[in-house]
Length: 135
Image 1 (tube, rainbow, N blue to C red):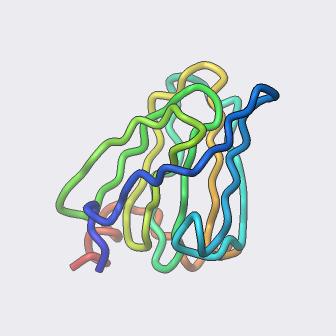
Image 2: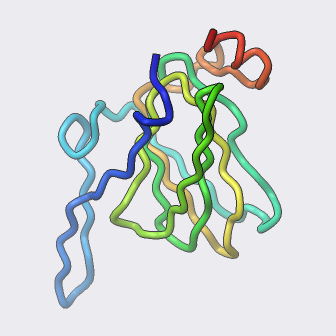
């Protein structure tokens, strides 16, 4: 089963030109899974949190394309926090890891790539259930 040691920042190759920067993400190449779903969070109040769940099978890549926020990952034993604030860096989160997004700056935009389409049965939304799942 995955641990927080499997969560890692992936540096996404960027082309910086006088006309602006381009950061392409290719499923199975730039990131370790094929992309099935893309979503983004925005207009999150500064004192709010998002996430607060784990996935049984889904893998994610979470990036901050504007502003900043912290991503807390937890494997039921250890916790670690990553600050995301660069559009060319993203946090890889494998299956079986609890995640929570906190400390949103004003105007922050979180961009997430997922390995599966939305499937409610893949979610673990209660932390005590998550700890039992990890045992």
